[in-house]
Image (tube, rainbow, N blue to C red; front, side, top):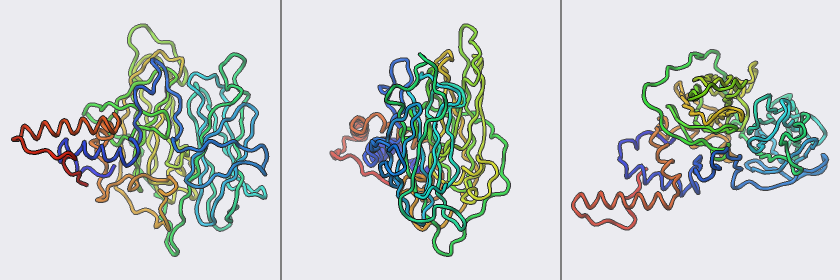
Length: 442
């Protein structure tokens, strides 16, 4: 999402940019190979490659340290409660998230899930504890965060170690339902720190009104994309129509940049099933949205009947002021600029596969953001340029195709690019081709 100016520079520049992005990132952000998906089955959640494996403690005085910017993996089973130490300063807002990621087709109960909380060493709650449950449907990655906010009259204002807990809630699935094994289900923990404002800087206010009208679907065709298994390999998309296909029990993730002042409208169009009449599945199709700190924003569901069905919703504009006084939690969760994650899920009892067209619209003119005393991206918040190009233009679908090329594999993309560029140069008069190819332009 670094701007649309490259759109007119031709295939060579696009490929060159794709290779460079792949090299800089160590691979494409959001690309998932077809080989990663079992034949005819749903792929499991892919944890962050840099995540550190830890084992939560059994009491408040135990547990491994978690630091801002860090990502960690552990496992949790029925009846367990795990403790971790989170090291925070005295000036940053902090968000500690956990994703519970059972393997697809695992048995779950409606109220199964986790309870997460963050407390000071003396037991003060930094924010209310948060129950993150499946609330029906089949197994899928679920997650949310709790926070420590800096402000007069709030708890947990000092620097030091805080106690983060992840506790199993719910009765667990019945016997033979394929619930968590003895070692439990995977969880992924992440700590993000948002710098405070510069001394004397005023906090931007929250918007008082915004549009709730869903945009009209564009007439142009949808572009093919393959969603990721979770937050770490979510497919990078932008405003437009994106075509994918889900098998029963599968969840796919997509990330889209939203900057200050902008709203995100999500319209997921599920195709009908051909052939025999499909059985009704209550809540068979689900769509959820998460913010850049992996905080839950909102979700919607629809019954599956085998007929074409759409699930659509919009958000409030992303605004720093949404964190203060928002009555609706979905408004309060729109407190960041950066990547927002769309999760699309299909129940494991649905007759599939089911094609899905994701219509996304990032609406509204960018607005000035907070005057941070630091860079929130240092600990994983936000997105490159907070989702905008240096010249303020929105990202173009060309970048998505570039990332898709990089997703083939950096080496393969480079070879394809060099071969194509060499052939083009020869057709233009047998000019000498440098081994390094043409220069990459910003």
